[in-house]
Image 1: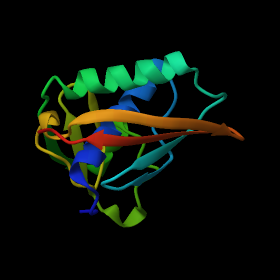
Image 2: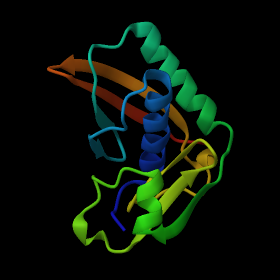
Image 3: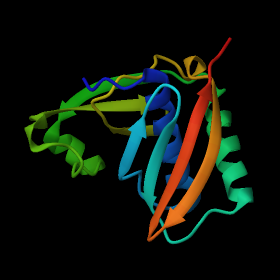
Length: 146
């Protein structure tokens, strides 16, 4: 398993699905996830408006506040390839693929650590966004639950 901060990594899954649903883009092609702050990069065609940034922030928090169970299952590579893009997985990932699900909201192949329930993530805070040469970068942090 890849050692990411479980809270931040789960928030990244919710952010990715939110971007897919709101803008019809693909999941982030690059990310850097750390306990204090993180960033995700998306292939995109423009900068976000402040209203769109607010919508993303609100939607991610609405999902996290639903206290959704985060589960995993292992499926064959063949079965996984019918539902998911496996291009980001290393060839050495084998014939069994781990799928991480955030309830019915998100599912994707993943090797990282996650929380058991979104209640453990805390509040998502979109810090800033930038757009340069076809790449939209979203920077965010988490306010831990009390």
